[in-house]
Image (cartoon, rainbow, N blue to C red; front, top):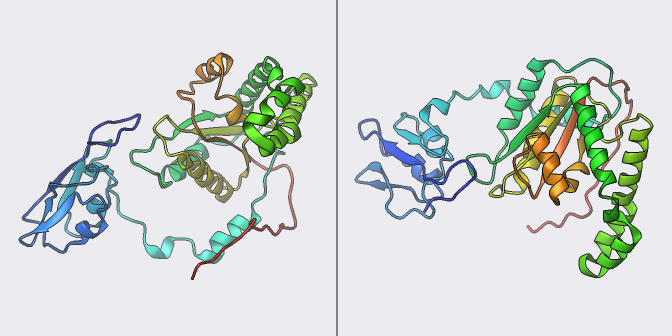
Length: 306
């Protein structure tokens, strides 16, 4: 039985060219579904897979003879490409330098982000790993300051109609059900967000998406691994940084547009196809500020088992 996603409900079809197959077994070693076995020195489709081929493409990508092809679940041999040479990949020091130089930028020049750079960001984000192929990550691109502000204005009008959600009586009512941590989160973060978003927008200042020249929203489907949109958004953020853009992740918008009929209408207006357990906005633009120092960060805890 195939594992369904919003894009397909069928298994991939494995085809093996016996004349090309040398029986090296590499495909068998990387297929964790047991969809491929070795018989009489040749790779063959297995009879007892765990789920059925999910079209991860590992077997097709690792075969040195090009003997395996996968079709279905949005994958085909046409999707294969030659890996860039190892020498062209960034080393650890280069990667660490890029990450250390990045800070969350909310102040941008009036320069728009070129369409070519938007495509490069999306190309990088498409390489993000996923819980289950094919990717169930969906993307909405707000490709100009005007588009970005229009969404932020609609979002603030939507919040005005949802003020009861952070009212004192509602938070008091819900505290026994969602516990101390959520109560503190709503009183200390969500309610102030409502207040400042709405008040500043009425004054003409957008502190929802900061009038960034580019905002990209990553979200999933009901079938999506919850981590997938966050990983894709992270890849996009790093790609933006590598292209000389300032970036910032915005986590407060997504959870507030998931429930209620009003939220559904807002999603429909902007072509957001699904409610999603997780999602993230990332804003991009040419920075109007420059930082001279980094800030050392820490984890809450690290436990090593060795």
